[in-house]
Structure formats: C-alpha cells, structure tokens
Image 1 (spheres, rainbow, N blue to C red):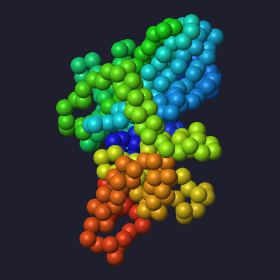
Image 2: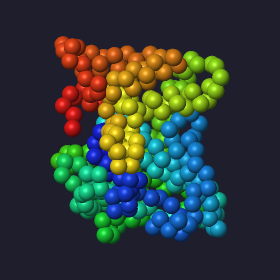
Image 3: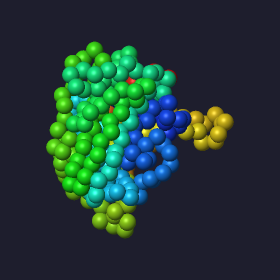
Length: 290
C-alpha cells in the first residue's frame, strides 16, 4: 500500500492472484511462480526490519534483501540481490496493479527509468540492469556471481510531480540498519524473553505513521475473522483501544518519544469535541472514514 498504510494496495497478489499485483525477484528457475526453487531461509538482519531471503540453486546461492528506508519524503521499497556462491541467473518481474489490483497502469520508459502511472500515483523503478515492459510487467533478467550485487529501488510520488531522485541503495541500507540499531539501543527492558520483546517493539514501531504519530491497529485489511462473516475490518486506522495498548507496550520498554507523538496526535484528533470521541480515526486524525 503506497504511499500510506491506508492507501489502496499496489501489490495485492497475497489476497488474489498474480494479476492483482506482484513483484518477484528470484532465480530464473523459480520465476513465474512455478513452485520450484523455494526460499531456503528467511530472517530479519539483526534487530532491524531488513528482511533477508536466501535462495540455493544447483549453480550457486543468492540472498535478496528487502527494506523500506525511514523516509523524509516519498516512500521507497529497496531490494538488493547479493551473490554468495557460484553464478545464478535471476529475474525481477514487477507487476504493479494499483487500486487493490483493479487498475492496469501506463508503464513506459523515461530517461532510462521505468515508470508506472495510474491516476494520481506514479511508481518509479530504478536499477543498473536492463528493464523492459512486457504485457504489463517490468522484467529484468540478469546473472549474478559471488560478491556481486544488483539493486532495485521502487519510489512512489504523485504522478503530476517531478521524478523522484535516484537513491543510492547501499547508502540507504547502511542508514536503515543504523536507524534500527540506534532505536533498539533505547530499549530499557531487561527481563525474560528479551529478544522476543524487542522484536515485538520493532513491529509496533513499524506500525507508527511517522509524519503524524498515529499508530495503526495492524497493517492488514479484508482478512475476515470468519469466511463469509460480517466481521471483516480494515485495521489500517488508529483504533483508540489498540493504540492505547500499543502505547503501554512501548512505554514499558522505554520508548517515550513515540508515546509523546501519539499523545499529540490524540489531542489533534479529538480537538475540542471530546464528548463525541470516536472508536477510530484515520492515521492523520481523519474522522469521516469509509
């Protein structure tokens, strides 16, 4: 969902099929969701939200890093393929489908960069390997050897705005890891299951919308409690009950800055009308929710 938690999904294949939006970077033998060559290992790098996926093939092994840098401007998704051993033929296939999979964007090349535009949104994809559009999919085929890396940077911006700057992926990775290292060092919890408590705190931090301080109940929507039932909620809003519980957990581990930011969010959301308190608001305090 770009650019906000509550924005329409760009990649909704998890809830549907490939045609609803996917982005796969994998060995060529695994491309196309054939089911072969599955990921051998997957974990977070240290105390961060940088995800590592390890693939092993008959010709070599490769690791793919996925992360979103803490942002000052447009949100980005950065993916870096790193060769570990041997030589592996790789494919990146990005099929963006805005509007929860309902919109086929206009995909074209601008100055060597690929852009997918649909209405008010534009997605720019930058990489050092050749890219081509085929049937609504941006495809890059490349070979990666040990100690080599190939990065892909997906940036969102308004379609009417100037193109976003091209990021330096390795710099962004270093800054992202440093951000999480600095943040986790503030954790004051020193009791049982500290590793699990810290991982939970990282997850709660990731559910905080930085520009406003609002905390979403969960980054999911349209996953019903019972198939065919009525309890089918969108949790990408700030539900006061859930946010208060999150707040208590963060305070209990020493994170006062997030608590202060949410308090300011709450004062703005309630404004001068506390007797009409709602159970939920938008992540920037919106009251009229669909």
